[in-house]
Amino acid sequence: MQFCRRSLLLVVLCYAFPLPASGIQDPTDWPFRGPGGGGVGDGFAARSQWNADKAKGELNGVLWQNEVPGLGHSSPVVSGDKVFLATAVASDGKAPLKVGAGGRPGAADDNGEQEWVVLCYHKKTGKELWRKTAHRGRPRATRHAKATHANTSVVVQGRRVVAFFGSEGIYCYDLDGKLEWSRDMGVIDISKYGIGWGYASSPAVHKDRIVVVCDDPKDPFVAALRLSDGKKIWQVSRKDICERSWSTPFIHSDSERTQVVVNGWPWILSYDIETGDELWRIKGGGDNPVPTPFAANGWIYITNAHGGPSPIFVVRPDASGDVTPTEDQPTNDAIVWSTSRGGCYMSTPVVYRDFLYLGNSNGVVRCFNAKTGEKVFENRLDAGAGIISSLVAADGKIFCAAENGIVYVLKAGSEFKVLSRNQMGQPCFATPALSEGVMYFRTTERLVAIAAPTDR
Image 1: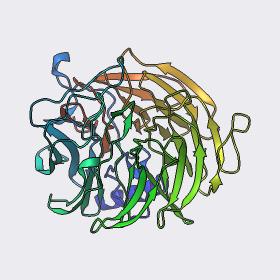
Image 2 (image 1 turned 180 degrees about the vertical axis):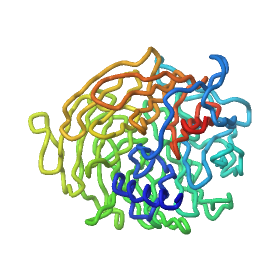
Image 3 (image 1 turned 30 degrees about the vertical axis):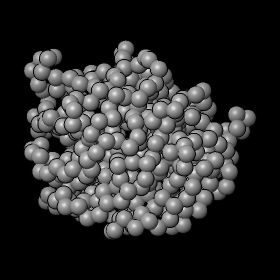
């Protein structure tokens, strides 16, 4: 009976969330931003209320929690019975981190020797299974005061785990932590105002191909490597296309083609994954592109912000050429709908059921009709509730992990309704993971598993 239920769930989720062509994905796994990169984890009940902060009272709803060494914004990734994280451990003590708004952007005083580490935990118990130091040394580029030296999340494909630390290289392990290969991609100094802001673009995988975006303003490029041995397949310059980007590439595959969509400024581009050839492009948007493109309703959703514009573009996958919309003509043959205002700066939004939800670093949550672009609501959460992590959705709820150490649970739908405010005890920058009703939150110092409603 258990096998039948699991098989039925796999079939249902395959229809609800089209799987990448890289193969059948276990519906209980949570890759970067969940199944298909959409941030949705339906199929299991999800808890609405909990307390993970001892200072606020008795712990409630916590399945387990572990201290995580060092500092990183790397999000948890679940594969099988394992949870993976990346972190950077400073040799000279606790790494500094700017929390909250205010102050001119600056580089962190964190240029001493570091260890870049991949961690693996048991999903059910939180027991650390292994940790591997990928690289040791002084950073080859500085980072922003609100960033870390381990911003990127790992990607798991089959029996391989890939971690990319920007200037400190890319590393491929097996599921037991054995290093299979590594590659130095050179210094990748993603900078602005003459200050390195840190690398943040996670790798993306399709079949035996890894795609990485390295938008150092001096020499921006996108490249495809072979998963089995790290050999470079192609590399394409993004000079005059993108001045800087911290966005993770999104791989979209359908019966017609497989494309790599890369957020950027001044151009957003799609590339053919086989050759690196350009397929389509959109001009405009925020000048600090961070959110990752994703698919829902058979379309590709893209947003960015900062510097004035904050657009949302909804693109048909068969787009070709320059498909840039205008204020006077916000739709065309390739653009389902678009708006020049309302997009996200840091957080990747989520489409859940009929609506597109966006969280912002100023604590504002916006909602649009996902199919028409009609604005539904715009409301502010509490003071200091900056949303840096990406939104996720499950069980009729939207989960917003905030910089003030609170996870806000919103009721999904056309009405702005906060169901609960859940204390984590520490700031949340990383995007949570969901698996079998359990939610995994990485705070600045801990990995916390919030139990499914049926567990506790």
